[in-house]
Image (cartoon, rainbow, N blue to C red; front, side, top):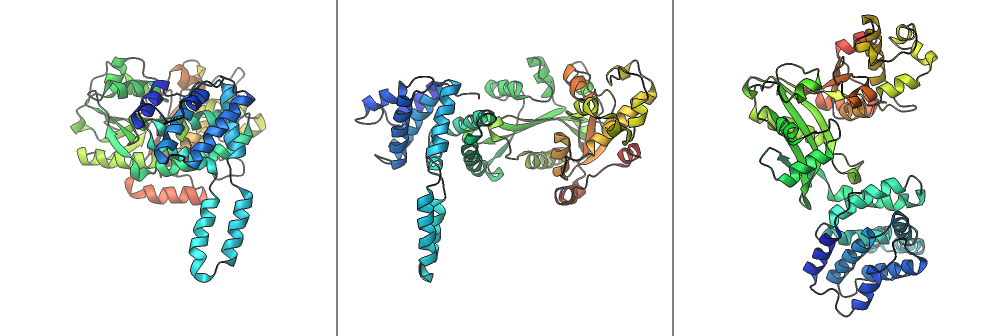
Length: 454
């Protein structure tokens, strides 16, 4: 979790009510002095504080003040203390079953003219009480970012503590509402953007690491574009961003795109926009999709600025390919195009060595197996096996072309055996292809990919 500094919550608390909660300085001291591992006595203190927050003693302003203090107290805890804190919310602040049963009975027995009112009461009763606590953070500075980071931690904690999953689900549902794409702002990032935002691009870049300020400057040059979705409650934080290269023809090598010494192309002469990096910047928003809308809005902006552009495509990694290839049973590979050919070569069969040491036959075998991998589906599912393929196919793209040794970085070799793939976004066909994939698992493939699969 990329925690917000405690000072942010201190400033927020003072800004809301200078001097804190009237008449409760002792209790403020209690909540801020809880131990890092959260003892049983400390849990009782936290519970009292949460109860007062939910009761809104002193009104909503005081309730938000208490939420700020809870946030500050949480950030001081160890992992054990945080798990115990979150366990309290998950265990004791869910849906009150007795109240739900009573509300259901009232709805059943309500006369016709009172059904709507009874239904509204039932709907409110079905909301866990902890959701009310979480909503208080929406009204304090940095509170939304705190909740995004809180879910980041919950995603990690849930792996060993599944009892926290209901709390994580409640938080995801709440964030999904707050981060509806209609509330997001698309902003272009360039070299004149604030240093704080540029530093975050460097930190959050998840596909091709930004090695230096010169590297970043090259990615923001006049023949490049970078766009990010921003939320009003997190104005200095990108949610997701895409890096674009304006080029002539379908790019097939990311090192050439990232080469700081390569000559720039006049954007007016470019016919293709290559999306070579898409990075989700907030792990706490995992499962809340922005990418589909981001790509479509960026395409529209690029078309408005450069009407001569004819192609919109990605140059994407194949992150699971090498792991899949090395783990596949020989019997499985023999049933796939290129599999028998690949297995016919003596071990060690290292796909990376094929760049300089292997025959053209080995290279062809690897590429054909990569095509098989990209069009494979998860067990008992119509979803593509590769997560990047699933993302782009969901958005209406076509698997267009495989590129040999397109990413020779350590990461590219380790994950994708150096291969990269172009996903093509043909604007008139995006909606149809997306619907075919999401409803029937149809994976759109170019003739070149289909040829590899024969």
